[in-house]
Image (cartoon, rainbow, N blue to C red):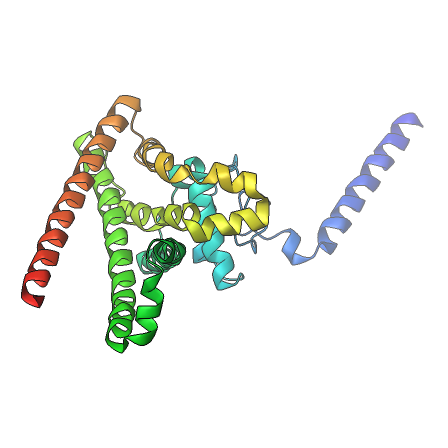
Length: 284
């Protein structure tokens, strides 16, 4: 009787399991989404702000929030900028391939907002040093128009120059990595440079104001220095994570990219100074 009862119990269990499997809805048995949020696992999540790692044990890479639909424009912008600054190690260490055009749009938008916020922050300082300038601009139409033209031309020029420098740094990282024996990932340095523009958005006045209101003054105070410390650390994370270089070779590649960027800054400075002198002489 004991053997018969056990056999009947096993048969009943198999029948119940088969019935439950047959009644499962299709979404429970189909292959899950290939791209999911690495933090919460939700395929519809645009990217958690508090994400610590971009990959889980499965190795699935979470897509950059800026490149995902489902969240507002500024939500995608701020989420990506914050990730590139506050969680730069995981963000750049597992930076995936993707649309370069979308990444470029992020870079230009971030730099326009960053540079514009710096200009607005300097207005009270300038007026405090030269209070007469406001009255002069109000009364002198020529001066007013000159100031407006300078703002509308200067902000985009500086923003595009910042995008170019970040891009050059990213390309320099790829060149430096190949000089150290790395292979593949061509074009990934462009994405590094484009998304590195998020540092400027977060660590300059507008971003610090957002952090202060959303997380408190203490968080803003701790975020401000990241603009100086993150670039080198993010570059190392990128070189080790994406190009798989060891510490010594990653440092060598990083130095090459930093030297290339420094030379570019110096060259741009010389051209800007020369242009200003020529304009002053011709204008005089």
